[in-house]
Length: 123
Ligand code: HEM
Image (cartoon, rainbow, N blue to C red; front, side, top):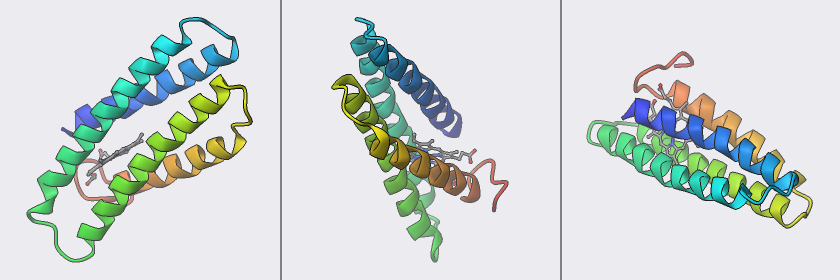
C-alpha cells in the first residue's frame, strides 16, 4: 500500500504542475488534466486511509495522534492543490494557495518519512 500511496501522490503532484502550466497557457485540454489530477486525489486519500487503518490496531501512545495529523495535513495538501488550480484557472492571485501548498507538502513529507511504516529516515 505504501508504494501505491507514493505513486499516487508523485503522479498527482506532477499532474498538478502540468495542469497549472496548461491553465496559464490557456490550453483547452487543461480541464482534462485537472480532472485526472482529481482522480489522483481520490487514490491518494484511499491509499492513505488504508495505511492509516493498517497501523491503527497496534498504534500506541502519541503515534496514534501523529497518524491523525498526517492524514489531516495530507488532506490540506490536496485542498491547497485544488485552490491553486481553481484560482489560476480564474486568473485570480494564487499566491496564498501556493504558500499553503509549499508548507503543507514539506510538513507532510517530513511526517510521512518520520512515521514508522516503511522508509523512515527521520524517525
Ligand atoms: C499529496 C498529499 C500527500 C503526500 C505528499 C504524502 C506523502 C507521504 C509520504 C512521503 C509517506 C511515507 C512513505 C514511506 O514511509 O515510505 C506517506 C505515508 C502515509 N500517508 Fe501520505 N501523503 C499525502 C496524502 C495523504 C493522505 C490524504 C492521507 C490520509 C487520508 C495520508 C496518509 C498516510 C499514512 C497513514 C501514511 C503511513 C505513514 C508511515 O508510517 O510511514 N497521506 N505519505
